[in-house]
Length: 347
Image (tube, rainbow, N blue to C red; front, side, top):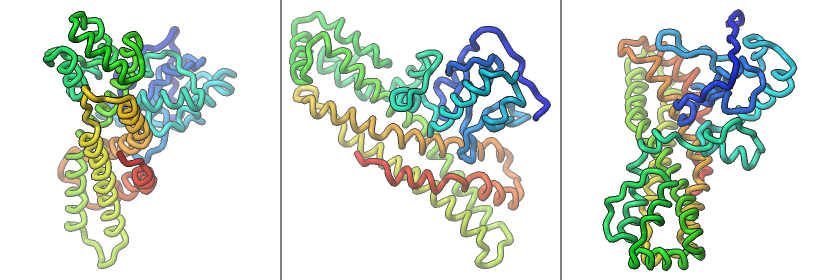
């Protein structure tokens, strides 16, 4: 790979929707990098939970990855690359996940600059995909204000539409009471609801990844068990013990995340008639408190599961290949994910 060079292009590279909405990839063009050759590259979290720069990806070629320090081997080496871009990319690489919510926290807490603010939110297409999760919040709200729930609000910013459409006296009165309960006024209420709606949407975003990986973790568990049962292992072979530990770790992590979502679903049901600011703020605070650990754990499990699915799409794979993959690729980083999940707050 050292002989390959990224061609430079003039102008800012567009940010792919996949990178904008992904939990494990991040377009370098989203950062204020100065070397044009870097603009076409992306940061990724790989199966070993390492952050690498991805040079290319293809169904037949796999993923070409290299360390950030190796950038001068692939793009034009200049002062901006060495003194500005590489340190900036290293700071971004420290993020535990690359979703927009993790990036927002980094902007606030670590001072990471972004080249465009659009990367701090999900794309409109992704918001529409997550519409079902938003309806759990917006339908009861619309029903409370208007007496019916036919308005379909899929974007947190669209919660403002509820306020603007509330021209009937009864609806305005309900909104006025809600404003008083949340210790704001009618002008400040839309922003307050939009802020909570955005936090609620983040929960839907993470839940969508959980829904994808739950059945695949079950398949992975069966795949590992089959390798153990079919393999010619000596009694007490440490490889079988480690493989069982890997399978158990996946199960424990996923079950714990499922429990977290279940706890929130049971507790965060608003009675809009008697809602108080404390209840509202507590629910939002709980979501924000869980974002970092959910992002890191779901990012790690996602990349491992989907790398397994990609690499072993064909059913007839040798037992030794399975053992090597489990121990060299699936196991690294799992202990860390277990620690992160065990340290997560409870709803």
